[in-house]
Image 1 (spheres, rainbow, N blue to C red):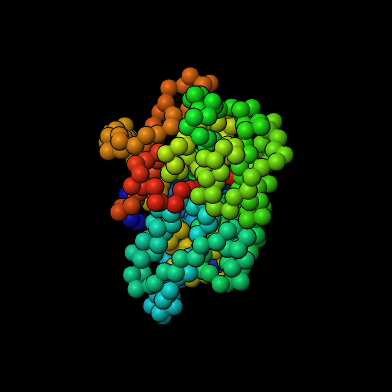
Image 2 (cartoon, rainbow, N blue to C red):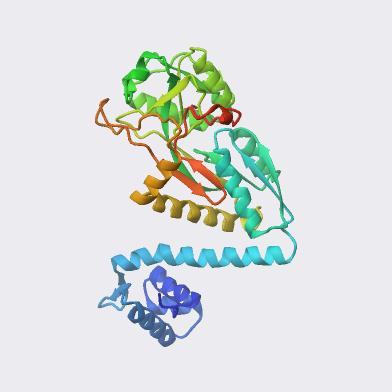
Length: 367
């Protein structure tokens, strides 16, 4: 890759794209128009791209590449600004401790990943984990009582910056001896009169409303249900026969429970990094980008057949529920890979693992 481009080129060209003209961009940047024109020409010729075409009225019309450049260049400049702000804060000794919140249904290994990555950035910074439900964490973020939190969406408070980092499919959790366990995949109709264990709506009202909307579209009506305030409680209720629940794909399960995918729907839980827009440690945006990039690289590697084979061979001792697509109950099971994160791992599905893992807090979601 050519190292010719500098931040100023992105700044100049972004101004041209946003103001849709060289003169307006030059006035905005307080520079000479000929200089701006030369910079734009050199950039495009160096990389063999065309960002815009000049019209008869001396304005510019963006090409498809130019439209994409607007978002890409802004991201490059934002990354630069965030990196510099973080370095200045570290130099001034402002990053001494980080209070990081974690919602109940966040994968603890993902949370640990974020903690470890921040220690890579600022080894001397101590981290204080804080666990709480969505309502509590949002309030503490707004009040500045915690610095950031990893939470399940939706979160809609406009005072918070929300960066999605991970997505997990929702699957049905049921007893292994339940009649529906004989199916490779369930349909929404199978949930009617069977889905009866949900996460307490008061602990994440927005997620509960979203779930009810999904169920309504799937023609599933929920009238009465048992409420749980923690993932462990959800599994305990299912195990005791109070009904099915919806949990994250990849949850560590009790030995008497199993999961089944739900065909014909796209129900998923998004995990996000959330922090106060106006008041947050300057290392947080850098940490978020670092975490997103690391996860993206690992997902990309997991698509390689060789990597998948190696990962599956390593985990061949774990029992996993079948993962079916939307074409019926007879779909052949397909085991998803494990995603390793340098020193820890995020299992993509890890049900019914050996008893030595039973002490690990299970992850479940039904709102």
